[in-house]
Image (tube, rainbow, N blue to C red; front, side):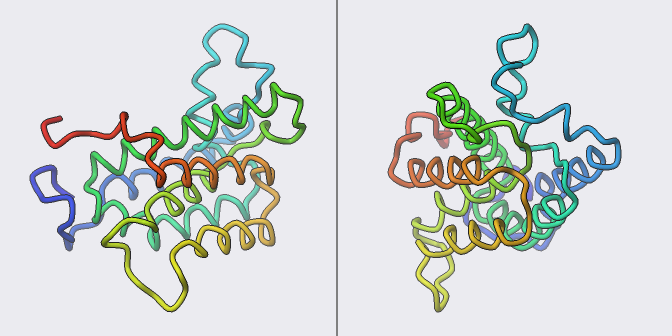
Length: 192
């Protein structure tokens, strides 16, 4: 999608950001970089490791988790990118990945075991789906929009052990907070 197109207009071109994201996830998997990108709270205290708050979404250690993430990018991510626009899609993905990582690290810091330590794009998919299924313009189907993120959470738990359940739940909660307007101050304005 080109930068000069309106955020609500659908383009026939292949969505650039989500397509590049698919390629990046696949390349990082082939290089075996997943474990080095995982969200590990104990490593965040070391210098130059804060990147894990964002890069945890790019790494995968289990093939089913990678395949599910790659499957959802053309089905869900392309629609979101065409609906939001490329810049807004990247912005929302980045903010939600960072917020999910921060929430998981906060829970881990409070002693909740299993809240962090994983990697994968599924928490961001859940956050994007939960955050945007409440907005006007979301395609109306037979299922209520609020149910879709919960069904995706259940499907992810059935198909893959990556990332951990609490990290997936952090993604879902982050998306619900986004839908409630908690990140409204971080939204891109039309002038930007």
